[in-house]
Image 1 (cartoon, rainbow, N blue to C red):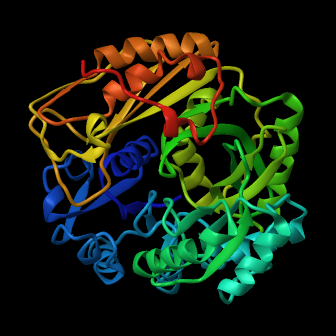
Image 2 (cartoon, rainbow, N blue to C red):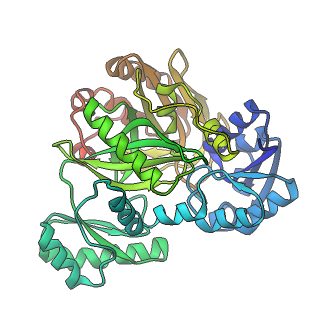
Image 3 (tube, rainbow, N blue to C red):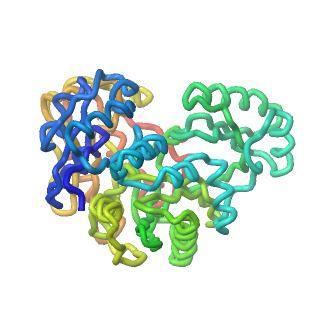
Length: 448
């Protein structure tokens, strides 16, 4: 087992990892930018190293600075969390070269699944269903139009290096194709430095359902059931739950087997998530694989009663998996609490938190790094907390979430709590009648 782990991240996920490390008697090192000097992950780590100014490129994305922190603290492993360098194969490779364990998959696995075109080709070979579309990158507009006509509109133009909805466009007719093509390429180039584009059939009325997997260094891969992430805005998830209200036992078995095949075909090591689109006929298609811990991992933790970060660290240390595939017996829902104004287009709302009271009670969990007096910086992702509730049934879980949201008080900045309160009262959400387009028609009531 490791002696000391450096957490190459910030905020709630860094604090989350620190807690598990302490429970495993592993020393921790926090890294932080000058904007995060008052963050709780800095306070609770055994050691903390400032790695630069607020800009991510000069701090949390700087591989030389993070490796310098590893060296001066004598850490023997790095946990990347999610975001930043978590799926950066070059970073994993540098760790490997210097004999530092990167807690996650190998650089080769990250590269194989990080490029969407390569990932799709890998899944086809593994027998995992994929969305019909181009065989690899599309070289120009004419080829894209030809492929789109063959598979039928609507189609989705996607950046091969994409993520978070960047470089993605829905094209409903041929006359709009060239305009959308140019727009997607331009955004992909500016966001990822790669304007490679491919085309897929647009799946109508899709659910976004993902399967959590974990693989050890000895060839074993298991799945830990599904999460439904269909409530999202501009491809950014807002609410996740497990099990999915759309799931059947048969579909869970089929998707679970497909996710395991996806992991086995690359000898996957660590925790990962295989993401699928599921149409209204319950046909599922591989979308992408995230080779890291997910923001929404607590949803799975609550229904399986296991610490996924702990399992991730144990696998990285070479231990064998002892569990088997899991079928959830409880229900869990996670609401992402963002520093955003839902009444103003979810505009970011950084600033000082004047008062902070988090929800408590049986089956209620809050993962956060903020507190009264903390100033939310404007430089990073706007998520400041995750509220997770679990109960015996979905209806009980929704009722508990309503109570927990009403107890959650954050003053001084705008948050998405009012949105979540209304969502938990929405008839379609309560009945499980939603897909990824839900937010296109959802309208907030008057301010509380």
